[in-house]
Length: 231
Length: 234
Image (tube, rainbow over all chains, first blue to last red; front, side, top):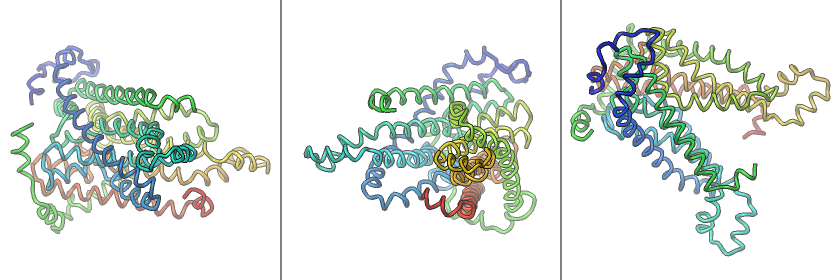
């Protein structure tokens, strides 16, 4: 609502040649920042929950291959549910219009992507590495945590990048039922026929996605410098 | 958020309310009934998917067969993942006008990459010794494509189609916000009028529609993919 009062009356009439109203953009930087904070909070809580669930599940699936197909089947099915449908259902009768309504489905998507990465990352650890660790006296738990998981880091980070970018993009869907973040720029822009606001939203969402994608890429290179040389 | 969020949160309905809305006979018939909306949703999704296939499949086959364009394709697929659907839909709605035409462009744009990329990867990763053997037997390049590369790559091609179909079903739901019909209407209208039973009923219908879509593609894959290839990939 603060936004509607913030728009200058002149900006409400749409002209094709005036798709980018820079004055409006520069005068709303603070507002963008405020929306971004909510947006990124929702996106990252979701990815974090997804990762926290995916790590033990993925380790288990790598250890007991028999349970991997069913885990994959369930997470793939959850992944195929349209985000708006899940959000709308949760809003209608389960969690209401709270942050949880957006976080829960995004965490599920994150889990679906990450459980695959963790399992496949662990499965791709060269057998010699595990055998060598065992020969050095590592017991299975210590071997998993100190040898195998670090060796799987490149694959896990690749999954983390996909999950983060999707999550940042998908948070915008929540704004259709009035929750959160930068998606509100799309809603308000549509309601007031103001393309600058929508373009600003698209650019900012894409920018955050790009920034965090780059940060994860970089952290992957720092945490697993061997992965690059091996290619 | 805080207290304001709490007050609104109390306004939702019970699961029973959603079910009774869903099972009420009067909600199934008429021009805004479930049946007509399901048909609408099917129509939008099928049309969009056909356009996306017409664009994505030949391009994917071509780039996979020639092994060119991989970098551009991975950029395209990353961009389509990073750009929020809702933003594209609202932007096109404002620039072109509300309705089907404005919605189809972003719908197609979001569906093409998964078809394109999966087709490309599928064809590219066909075992080179198979292709060489086919060439050695005197098959022409297009025969290699039709008889060897496409059948072997079919699991991935169908996966691409399935992903695209689900994407279209999901995006068509969101497109109700920019005036498209279909099942998304119940979610958008239910939200606008604070009718939480309608909101939940729409959500369940969309989810069921998506699961049905996925099942159809899984069945197709079973029938289309040659048993030899299936044994190889699974």
